[in-house]
Amino acid sequence: MMSQVQRETEKFFDHVYKLHLHVFPLNGESDIDVELDLNADNNTGILELHVPLVYGAGAMELSRPVEFSDLFESVVRFHTTPSRNGRDLSIKSSKFELRVGTAPGVRFEYERDNKGAPTAHIHHSGVAGLLSPALMKNFFGMKNSRKKGRIEDIHFPVGGSRFRVSVEEYFSFLFKECGFHARPGWEGALHASRQEWLETQFAAAVVDNPYVAAATLRSLGFVVADPS
Image 1 (cartoon, rainbow, N blue to C red):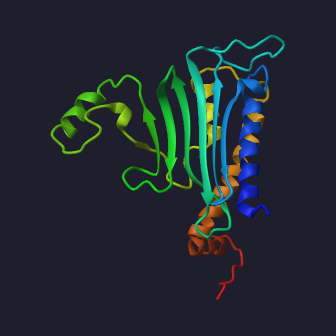
Image 2 (cartoon, rainbow, N blue to C red; image 1 turned 90 degrees about the horizontal axis):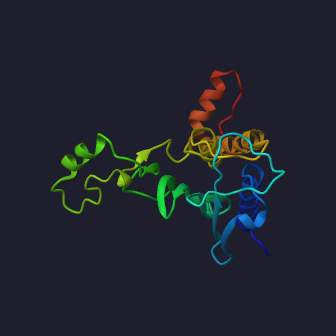
Image 3 (tube, one colour; image 1 turned 90 degrees about the vertical axis):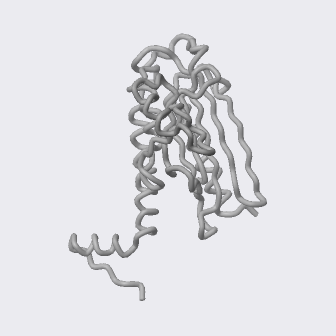
């Protein structure tokens, strides 16, 4: 019999897949490269989606075949696992990547159990500019330093575990900031999906800090009883 976590995993992966169909201008579902691994023994799952991008800002008319870039693609990867209470779905790690050829251009990453870097962070492989000389000086001579002045090895922290960059914000980044084509109606689809994600994160934040949440509600006039 399928567990609650397995059902939540399949529902979540289906949502992420359909969100791709709603926002990217595709000729068909075959334009998405899907890698899926579901492990029923430990209730974990891995979903990775590759989509080629289309040059040109704005929503694209889909009355003609889409011509994809041969250089840029979007990569989205989620690794799911049971939450610490064992009953709910949790994201163990995620990666949202604007890939340039075979190289990672910009990566929005989340690693729940990472102890050596910010849990949520950005990697950027662009031109280092004025930052490289400082990095080279700062890390010169350090034992076991992987950075050695390379900007692509720096973790730029973003939002922590609860309020990290969402896949919806990453898609908006691709279309609004980077100027790649989107499917008509993409903004509405992302807005609705992001609201669901925010509500989930808010609920999880309350679980993390129940007494702070209760105190805040009381300050707004709500009556909140202590469970004891």
